[in-house]
Length: 203
Image 1 (tube, helix red, strand yellow):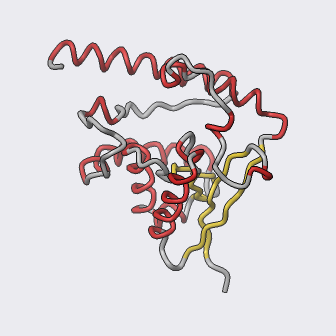
Image 2 (tube, rainbow, N blue to C red; image 1 turned 45 degrees about the horizontal axis):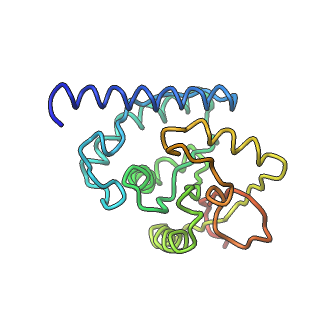
């Protein structure tokens, strides 16, 4: 598509996604701050699962993210928790955010506690999860360690599924399954989410 048709598509998709985000924020009791960044397909990336971030992708997010980081620091000061996707599933938008944080790790770690989350639904597939974790560990500087923090859902299973259902444009009419939104790990651990915290290695 070109010209007006493309602009209309971008506008329509952006409106739908923004409305879903606002509904999620309202249901979760959180405040959403939009950075006005377009999803990869709207930037002309035909296969977002088959592309590695380019320098232009990192440039694209740098100014909005720097502005966002400054705003967070101004409001909350040092020690705020900064979470980024691990890039499991190799979605170029997730990888771009992951790589931006890793490229700026020295500066960011002086102000924030940094964690990377096992991005779902991708991490619910065992092969993808293991490959993604392996790749992620290779990117962490030798001087640092990663500590996995498991967040059990316990009594929040139904609440989580209701929040997922808000994103109907991505579910394509299907009811979400909890199995698709919990990391593919030991089933005895129960439904959970996971964050890998970046820390200095113990002496």
